[in-house]
Image (tube, rainbow, N blue to C red; front, side, top):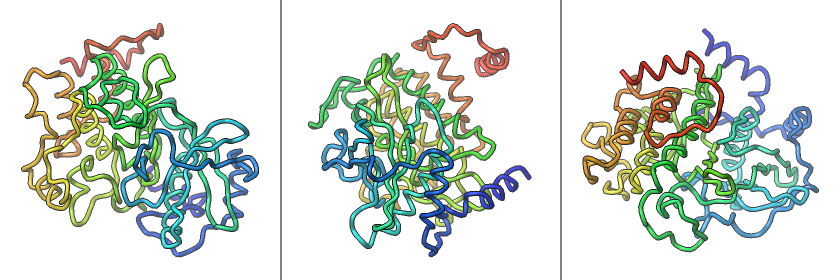
Amino acid sequence: DLRSAASLALTTSTGGLFPNLVSPSAVTPEMAKLEQLGSSEHWLIPKKDLIVLDGLASWAGPRTQPMEEPGLPCTTVRGRWRGTPVFVKIAAEAPRDTETGLDVLLNELRMLRQVRHPSIACFLGACFDYELLSIALVLEYVEGPTLDRFIFAGGAAQGREAVRHVGPPDGSTQVHLLIQMAQALQHLHVRRVPIIHGNLTASNILVDRQTVVPRPKLFGFGLAQFATKSQTRAVGGEWRYKAPETLTDAPEPRTPEQDMYSFGSLVFLVATGDEPFSDADREDPVRFGKAVRAGSVRDPGWSHHDASTDLFMRSVSQRCMRKEPSRRLTAPEAHVVLTMHPMYHDDMSFAEPASARARRETHMR
């Protein structure tokens, strides 16, 4: 079938140069071949052109792994590439973590070199270090906070100091943020071989405040996977955003539906200003996972809000977080539904395609 053919193509072309996070290989990555690939695809950055600055990226605050699930052996720092400010993602310094950190970075490289979208952090290139047998990923510099800090501050400007929780931003900002996130997921999911982000959390999204309308930028592709038959199960991810089917003793393969469940949690965060499942037992994710699988925990926190609290966003969130994956909204569907929010306005003057108009009418019925 198409997915099998695509999987074979990935394996026989460049896929062999990158690690499989599901079935890790003990083979050391062939740096010379990766460097040759980078040169041919024009993303190789010479070591002399990159300066890594001391300290964490400005949005990180006190956290040491701001863009990843706690425990992943990577960190993001500021840098300059030929004078231009950039983010540089590197493996942790601890020798025992070096191999795993390299696998995560190579996996992220494998994904980002194939993705281009305004709401996905732009991959600028990679720099190889033969002495340390490691690489550094160079990503666009985004001036702005993580999504959770932005939401907790009500969309107001915040520095590195503690964020004062003042509630969610206005409705127009909410819907435009979510539409752009849905567009990014649609870009990943409708590919011939879908890419599953696998770690869609508020801390893996930065909000660029240098644009007219705040623009979300999706980071953290270290756990992303292609939706192929070789990816036999889901790995990693933050429990607060994980779909029920990934919390079993034998997790199912990565699917777009799992990203959409995470998106439903993000809709709750953006619309209410509260962290999803904030009343859950944070110290025992295993216990929480069992409760989700048993169906006793289905609500990220809507019950703590007045029933009249944005019924539109509540509906979108709940439709994305249905227990049955096949019944969840897809990214294209979520995008279309969100454009029907009363606070949405499209400044683009292009005529709406007939296919999009038909989808609108279908969802309105």
